[in-house]
Amino acid sequence: MDRRSFIKSAGAISIAAATGSLWPFSNAFADETAVPKKGGHLVVGVDNASSTDRLDPAFWFETYMYFVGSQIFNSLVEIDEKAELAPSLAESWSSSDNSKTWVLKIRQGVQFHDGRTLGAKDVVYSLNHHRGEKSTSPVKGYLEPVESITASGDHEVTLKLNSPDVEFVWLLSAVHFVITAENESFDKGIGTGAFILEKFQPGVSTLTKRNPNHWNSARGHVDSVETLAMNDSTARVAALVSGSAQLINRVNPRIVGRIQHMPNIQLVRAKDSAIYTFPGLSNLAPFNNVDGRLALKYAIDRKQIIDTVLGGFASVANDNPFFPSNRYFAADIPQRPYDPDQARFHWKKSGFSGPLTLSVADAGFPGSVDAAQLYQQSAAKAGIDIKVDHVPDDAFWNDTWQKKVFVSSNWASRPTADAMLSLVFTSQSSWNESAWHVPAFDAMVKAARGEANEAKRKQIYHDIQVMLVDQGSEVIPLYADALDGCSSKIKGFTSIPGMPLSGNRAAEKVWIES
Figure 1 (cartoon, rainbow, N blue to C red):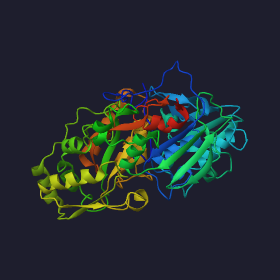
Figure 2 (cartoon, one colour; figure 1 turned 90 degrees about the vertical axis):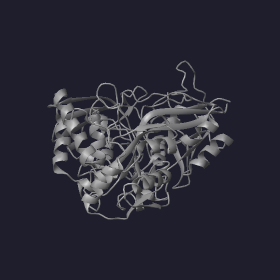
Figure 3 (cartoon, rainbow, N blue to C red; figure 1 turned 120 degrees about the vertical axis):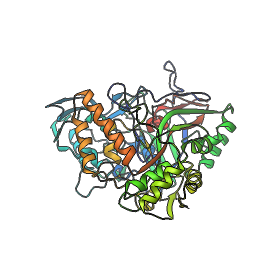
Figure 4 (cartoon, one colour; figure 1 turned 60 degrees about the horizontal axis):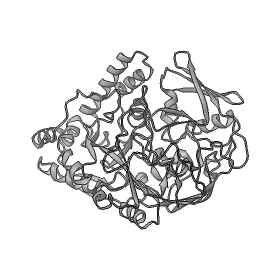
């Protein structure tokens, strides 16, 4: 969902070509020859903030905390502008034992905000934070194959897996895998990031100041960053237009025509950056049988939603969470059309008479309410009665998602195919939003993860996609483009394929020209 966020890379990933920034947008405002200007106060408006937000990454659910947390903390590795894996707190990594043992070399000379020096034990502690028996961290599933994490030197960490994973380090680019000091509470906000926490008001705002001792001289140019909770898309754009915010995320595509020619605004478009979904709990009717799921997949007019709700800034998806830019994407699976007759056939066969309540909020994905109403209309032509329940944005992820039978949701692209599957679809995932518990599916995901033969691996991922398209309990109508906006005075803004706000690190990359 955007409760999450990463990408893919050239060669060993899924998003190598997803950066297409086309009219009327630019994909980067960074001039490699330009010298960043120091100073100034940056104000950013970001959505999906909640009064229940915490600085602990095990509880980060959406864009607001991703963006705030990335100012304060660093991860071991990052995804860069070329969709490649880049070092951060880990300078290098290597594997042995058929990709079951991974060794990370930790950067030396890095200080935490309180003056402590980064070492291997801090990394071990921070990663283990997500592994506890009672942990509900969204990335706990990523570490399920890990048997041990040890400090094999003052600045060396060794991870031993119970099964091969040829792309394991890519998972560590997940925004949740940030590092704090050993035995420290993440909620204190003590990191190694480009900015130091000054004030945190969950659901309201966050204030940070530039870290004068930051290890990366190429990051952290402004003196301070104020991140405002702006869940309303109209309010965010109004703030950008008025100048009260210099950077915002999720520009509503339907208003692009009104602001695209304003000289004081720049827009950034990253194509096919997220899947917008309607997950249904597979353990409850009508999703507890394949016919109920198929009926709802045939009953949605995908193209109508794209044209009407997203102004064309999206492409049709086929209930498949793999992105078209993913090298394992199965392009040969026939696109499921809008077909009221097929929907009516499967609905009757499912034995469920309805009505079915679809609980939505724009927190689920921008335009969820309008999309749900169009879905309601297209389904009605198949005799399927959908009741749209517009629930509050605040606490949507806590009170509605994974609790109501049918909801809206969204997911940004992930660093590997396995990262998306392990996060959202395998039985052990805490973010398994459709309660999809299929042992055969879990076995295929595990097999693909450790398969070194590329042809065999591709076939396994093909079979996985066929299963999700034909049997999965998520209606995935489209791949949405990411649209960010910023003041024309903002420089250094770069586009990360498939990720908003420059991989959630725009605050530390940009500077302000007077």
